[in-house]
Image (tube, rainbow, N blue to C red; front, top):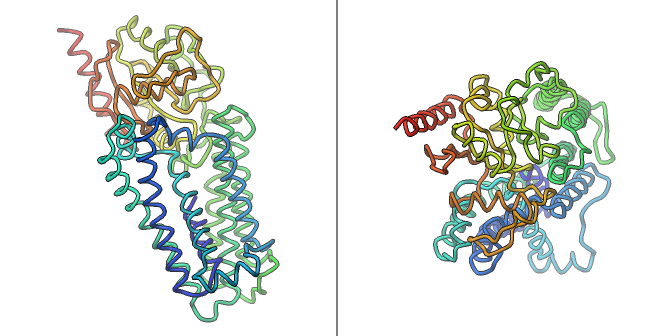
Length: 457
């Protein structure tokens, strides 16, 4: 979501090439330093390894991003422009546009916080080391990760500044900004959806989300054909090939989204959508199934607020899943996930929908989805515990699940799959994000074979 926002931000500013390059460099350096600072904060304070998860899933930053994206889209549509007061603008002009530099820093801050919604295996392991008191290795690692993360965004920031210097820009540049506005408007829903899912509000279902997206991309296609005109647009005398191509792409996206209204997977963009469990109308669901639920030992705790997608049945509480695995003598699959984890939803769409893998989930093992960002469910008081990792009292289900992952597996990245015996023995190398069904099937079979070998000895 930050790519179109970054491009449009740096197109919307000063026309001087040198200033755009300076701001882009400040933007990149800020991203690198912010990642490094996060490592230092976790190392030197009691923030804990789940600091980034809390930051990216709380309603306040998500609401700020939602509003920020809406405001940005409105500006790109030409309703208003971001301008500094004249006095400040003159000072900025004389001092290499300090206002723009400050804005570039806050754009970098937004980019970094947004990226925390699904941390990769590298940053997850580094934050766990930082939380254990190790400073130098996480600091160097976070600096390196931040540098690699910042480079493409910095290049994107420099490119629009160079594009703005092209001669005879005319009305085409405003059209680019309006198209960016449509894209940012679509992406803004992601952050409202995070709030809706994390706090179980039930406002924005997958169906409604798709309807809004379809309308946005249809209107964008009509705009590109010159049938809609905004305040700063020039008259479209004729449709060029590139503009026609973009209009076609916009209509193709809308048509691609349409089957999703009836339950289609839409695997390629599943990470941007609400989970399939929020779908109100789903023709792909087998209403006559449910046989897998009878294989569970009892009704899963907290199933009124959390659900499994693709007719997979399992538990949401670690202790309950362990007890069932012991009673049925089956391996248990721990699936560490999050309501707002994009990669988790993408992997579900690619893997869980596979009939063979789905059958293994429901028949060969005890599936357990452990949401590390679950905020609404509070554990019974007799289940509260003090973490050996950060010394904090864990009362919420999400806190407990995150602690289980950090303490036992030294990472806080999601998705994270662990296949283990009911006694807690890990049966095969855990798996992070992987959308290849064959490789995931190999992971399952290897773990189950190891379990059977151990039980026959």
